[in-house]
Length: 235
Image (cartoon, rainbow, N blue to C red):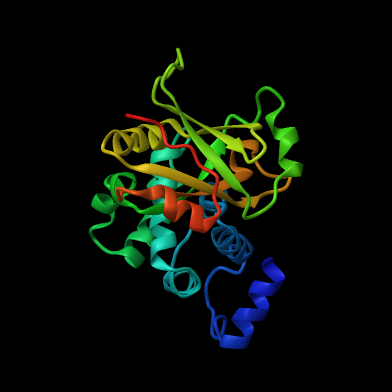
């Protein structure tokens, strides 16, 4: 879905009827919503951060266009995974607090320790020519999440490999460390690609994946049923 399709949807269901917000900010708001729906949450947070004034019309439009769970995931991705200051510490955070409620800070703090599944970006694509591999990736394609216990720089690093074994990069450090804690408790991880953005975006926001955390005693069968290639590290 692109901005044109979103506009068509909103016009059909009355989502823009009586909109009295700042029209100069509307393109950023609509683009942010599209990126959230694509699963590109870090890029979405950056786009929504360009909306400097959040009034009732902007908040209402965001609330009716995106599921609360996806918004919470975006906040967690932004707060835990940003390089530098998170967008959600600015005006955007106040808007999201109005939508998600007063417990937002606590939900974000515990998000990666409790979420059964979430969307996140893959970082490190600027190195070793990894970005060149993006053009061969397909939405829905499985990825392997490999805990690099012997990594000399970070023994809690989690590498992301394509279904063909290509090195695509890493999970953001804070996210990876949370996943390692869960893996030590017996959890297994699986992943699949949800979106690959074009070259106009920051390279560290272009590749976005869905991660599922399996806590049951027999994940192999369930993962096989989903057809996802995975690697489960021994704790």
